[in-house]
Image (tube, rainbow, N blue to C red):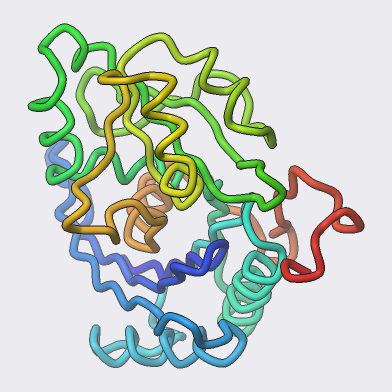
Length: 257
């Protein structure tokens, strides 16, 4: 099975194809992911389809051979979310294939499950703190605000579980509600890192600064989350694919429209 996933809700846009074998004898399928990151600074309207062509070429398949698609649906930058959804809709409708929508915040939180992030966070935290680790993805929403949500890894550390709703807020009131050791991800967390450390001290964890891409959303994480939902039958018709906006479009700064 093959799914193509698009993550374009922040400037760190990417495209991925995930392939997996069918489940046999109750065993989990093996997964292979090919990821293409878009060139920074180029408009996504120009480079997203080029990245799609590149990831198809690298995996040796064509659009009609895909079994479905996945899209990161926000919250995030308005133009990026719209471009990603329009691209996935067009491809899925043309191929007559279903779609899996994925929350940008959930996809970003799922990055915490990657060994180079989760293992490092657990080493840095005490054993007790590691067992109560909170994951807080923050996406810059401009105006001194962030899109954010609170997640926890499940006991098997195979998925994240959201606690409460996603919000649009300034960072301060969010930080006041975080009591455990917290792993922060996203450009919003990077932007407000000094404030976070000042408020939470040693309870605030971040991925290695030597690998800044670990802070960003990734189409690979979107693809893995979408594949799990695909196996559960949680797909929609591409015409039903819609964006998740926590701020009304009329209030968006001109740079995000």
